Length: 225
Image 1: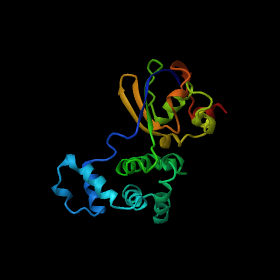
Image 2: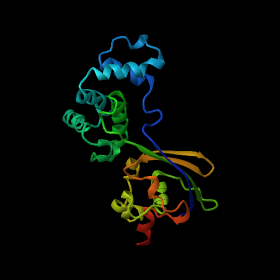
Image 3: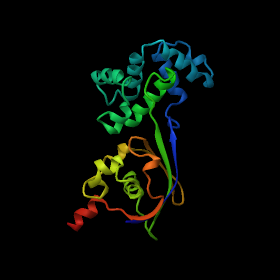
Image 4: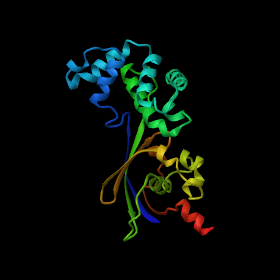
């Protein structure tokens, strides 16, 4: 498939919209042993949660949050290990399972704010772009499609291009795209927004802001062979 790509903006953020809601805060207040969460006004929930969290040791608080968000994925021993590692390194960038990086980021950033910077600061980049296919092209724009198209405008030093060149070229399946792209939003017409960790992509790595490219799926390559 051929596409025209135009990068409109790349912004850095330290949190994801909607990562936590008031129901989350109420449940977490209970887990952090605050007894009267139902009596609090919605605007007070996060502030009181931060105070409740600060009564715990950082690794204990991390374990409670990890268990809340990822107990269906992580075993108890993994939760314990990560809760200690979070104080020393950016686990949302370095943990071996990239498919839980987004939730690790959400946990890390809540802890970062609750402890006033005691945890490492991690960030995401939000890319606003236009992706225009050929006339009458009705192919679905997926996370894989977007990464392949955007890669044509990135420098050769970009981590995705260095680690996943076969996947980008359609020579291997690209399941990793689901873990790399945390949010993909269709903004209307040919406009999209993509959110990913700054580990994978930064503003400075875009060497071309407007270009044409060709995207190959893994199936396309198999048929050619």
